[in-house]
Length: 103
Image 1: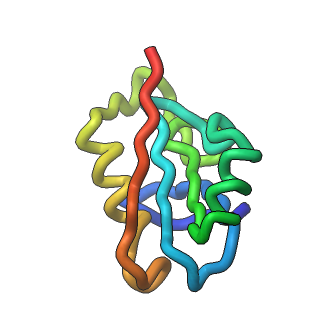
Image 2: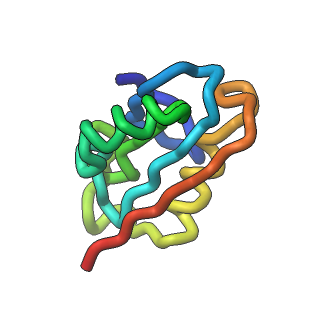
């Protein structure tokens, strides 16, 4: 796993597959960790020709955490985190993104 600066915070992320393959960014719901994306699913996606990238959202897993009362955040913050994480210098190819939301 690795860390990346994005939107003023550190984002923990993990990749699977060939970096020259089609990038596929897996985005979890609010406060999701990268481990919520099943390992076998990620391996299968990489075998099917994707470079799989999954990450811990802010305030989850090994990404930057905040004191609850000190730093409320919004869905816009999470979108900005994702946009800041996906930079051309880090991932130069266009992206496909998948979102998972569970209630």
